[in-house]
Length: 218
Ligand SMILES: [Zn+2]
Image 1: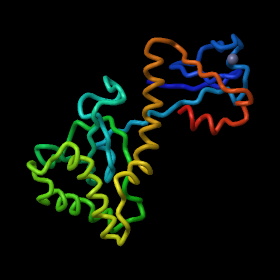
Image 2: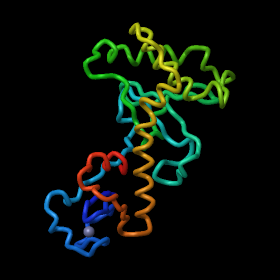
Image 3: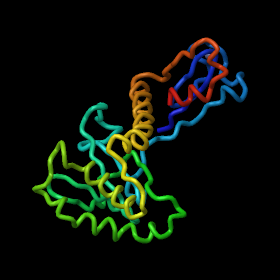
Image 4: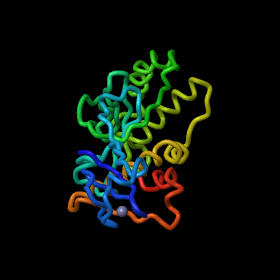
């Protein structure tokens, strides 16, 4: 379902379909020229099985767009080149061909890293067979899906002679920017479930710093 943002008077309007008149000031929306043309906001979620060599995040139960309340448990995994999701839980490492249809997705390999592109599947399969990922080693707090995914990323980094990433670094640099964007999108989605238009007033002088507001509000 489309999510549009229209800038008008001193407000950002979020809607499914642009109304003829601005609900904030009553002015005609078509009259504002290019700055008030509706912008389509892209859904931040990806079909995980179509995202090769990526770090994926999804709710452990349910999906982001249905039932996720912003604090329920999340589950993470890593895709191979065909979109099979390797993920670790109390039953060991799963190689999932379905169930990851709506994810936050962080690509892990640049297209120019030819050697790594070729080795990826073997590295991931070999790594997953390690005894660290046997079912009895699982611990919900200390040795979980995130431990598995990050350890694999660090395994790849170390083969390239690079420094490992701590959990905090990886989360801060790669996961949080994406999950903030996703949570803003979900907020708008929820607001628009029971109204046609969601109005966010801009502060005085807000017209000049559109990029900043785009960043803040979506
Ligand atoms: Zn207006």
